[in-house]
Length: 336
Image (cartoon, rainbow, N blue to C red; front, side, top):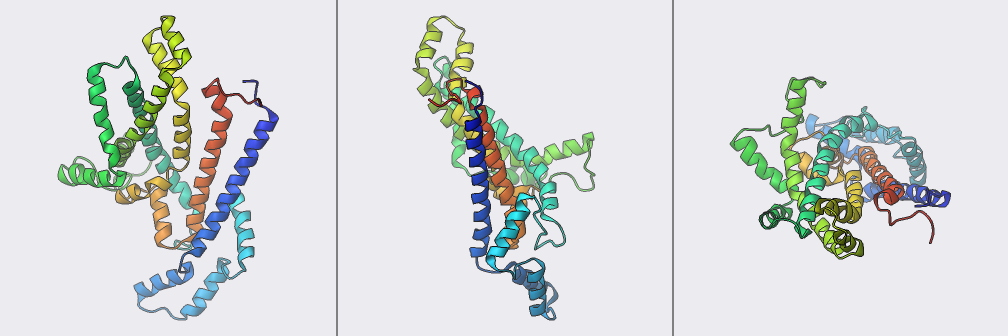
């Protein structure tokens, strides 16, 4: 491995900074290309609720000045960069005077707890299935039954979520259909609250695990087939090593690297891919919060959430780049 070199570290950190800057610039530009104005939309909602709003033009101008939307675009951009890189995400336009970082702080633990755990379960189960499908020593009965688990990959998670709601929540009434915990409960480390969280999180987690583990299995199967013919696998078999050791330490270990890369990217951007699932189950995570920001044309909220996603993915990629040699000894930090 040769140790972590200074040149390699500086190069990766530079790529991290460049990625975050480009991403934050894009999320500043894209919402402003969409038709409509957040302040006008907010006054329109007030008008729809109250029937009429006095001095609406003055209100719009005052609020545009309050949020800095009356400044030239380059001034808005420089203010925006200063704020996001100091993690001052500002006030929500649709839920003023709530601050964006407070809203994200309330939603992020739910997304990490439920969807992060569901993704890890899907990763472990899917890769185990894929490895067993490609392994010559897998029993015939298991080899015949394992492909059945891949049939759900054709179903989008939100479609399976709707089906699970119909069967298990509304039909059999086994599990709750919405929310993160029961009404009237106070969050805390007590058994009643923990069991309620588990019950409310079972359906969305199940929808994600069942529909995504097939993708991990297919990727792992392809990598295991490629690895099976390598010289070190043949040598390990010729030396008489135990099949279990060959399977895990030689086959799975040398096939898992692309899957770990995909896992890091998936975990880093998990909120963006679960918007519809969280919306269906009214689950108070980052995906549902992003949906609220979009329908309310809330620039600040959208930018804050997507910025956190960009930082999350970039950090995951940076950590992976630094850990690659530990995962796969064939990779080195040293230039060839």
